[in-house]
Length: 356
Image (spheres, rainbow, N blue to C red):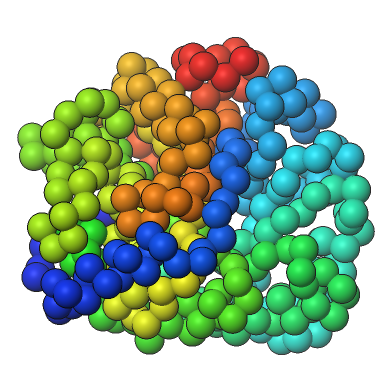
């Protein structure tokens, strides 16, 4: 997770071109998604319930999509015949290895194929926030690794059922406000472009980890709490498109869409692979509270149930994965990092967001 940068520059797009982009995004033949609740099932803890118990919880909540940060065999086995879609993750440390086609085939054969079709593995994230790393080789290898894993899936007859992408934070943007001014960081454009080309060629989504909480935490006097919590308020209007935003998450998603358009890609779907709000924090972690976490996730879930799209793509329901299912007691960093869960490890609710 990374802090969103909120700088402003006048976009190089002309106003006319921005309006044409708006019409394209609103009325094009983009796939109309069917919204369902997704959640991140993190495991950086030593006190979590068993995967079987987790599955029982998810079924009771009618959650149909999860994302995990590895290919944990116990989870993939326990979730067989559950009809729950699972996005798995190939760790950053393996990205360089699977650039080699044989290594990619071996990885898919070992970590994916044995669990199919009983376990519904619907996606593979190649790395997690690789562009936040200082490892230039990791970033350079990302697109080739995605291509190798996809080729291995195709070779095994799985290419049409499992999407390959990579989850990235909004730190890849140099500008994000207003959304139409958004652009990728100049130092990353050459590395992100091959990834976007792969996504466009394979019809895969661009996964982003988006946290309005960080924007509020870094500047609580200037960022409206109502705006980041989906609560009623004035919101903001993009001066170049006249699109009105009543919450920051949708503005962040549209900022990524505009950044992709600036890079030459207008048909890639954006999905939110992580978003959430901590229910507890250290002194000085502004906004980290049980009340704010409940408001953010409850209001976001209401939007999900209404199958909303963003102002730029109103007809395409936005797919979102909440972060996270459980509080994770072994996560490093400030207290907030260990308190994003909707549930405590003992199975009790951290707070009530309306899921029954």
